[in-house]
Length: 318
Image (cartoon, rainbow, N blue to C red; front, side, top):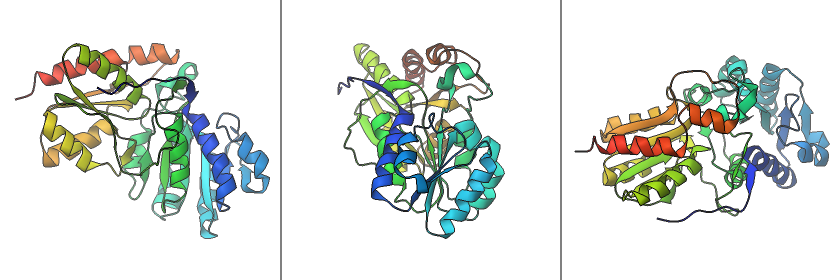
């Protein structure tokens, strides 16, 4: 099993901010709109270096989405930025009508997603955003795993024609992917090859899957770990190739068990290769206030929970 280590921890939202800074230098059509959360979204440098391309909308998220849709008509590539809860649930009608239905080239960038927002509590910890966004026709949904991958994804979506939902988070996490990686939308990343079980993870849960894989190796179980950073369009070929080899699968996500990565994987398997599957996700409930680590433990999203899911699913193999 390949060993992954890290020398630093950084938040994925900083990957977004640094990606935007680079786009500010290389793509004159990129503009940024923020809903009164510039420091939290790490857009200070973009604003400082490109004041004519930065728009502070204030606490008016619906207006921000509508303005972004209008900017695309003039050839601009607008990146809207606020917390994930406000990027989706608060403005769903505007996204559906003005962006998705109208096929506008808007990049909806959402920070502070999932439970690891932490102490702000359930009102801000959106756990249904992936489901909301992936159900919109034509919407690409991306959930990168660390600082480097988030930066690469931010840069890559500027060249993608069509609406994108980019999801990232607040806490500092291990940085373990290649800083010079080429981010390919819709192409899964094989983290580790294995033979006994497939673990398919997304976002912050990829590192937990790596830790779980190390524990499973000590138990004599060979885990194949796949990072599905693009939930839509999902890499069906990578999923089917892996599961066809291992014969069982565990999905892991910092999201509601309903509507997220797990259901997308289950659809692929049900249609092509019915396979035993277990889900590591938040079990149809809201979050609560607490530290990220406390919440990950309480809601069953730690590496040990992935190990337990693997042990369960392997008993279902034929």
